Length: 101
Image (tube, rainbow, N blue to C red; front, side, top):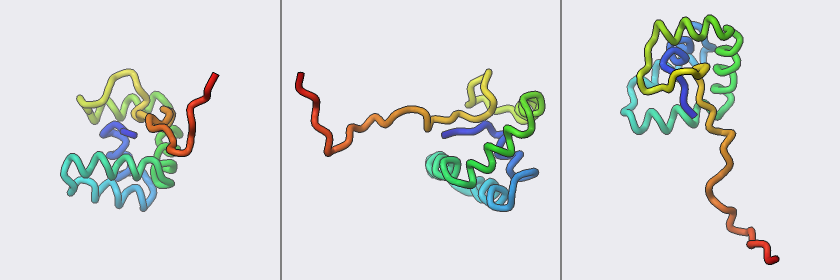
């Protein structure tokens, strides 16, 4: 799960205390660790609250904030959040057997 840099900036300025602390502390991590920890945070309750607060801003305000805080690693035409949780697991469960027809 990934979010635009504007969402992290919003977490520092307008997020709850937990999101604010995480957004500030994440800047001290190296890139590979930051990606891993960001994804874990965003899938948890802190991320749920941050996403909810971001969506409450409305599309117009979100777009404005994303223009003010550019992120060239993020695709255009999104609302600032790439929610990868909707993809199914790529790993087959160990206890399942293929169906014989």
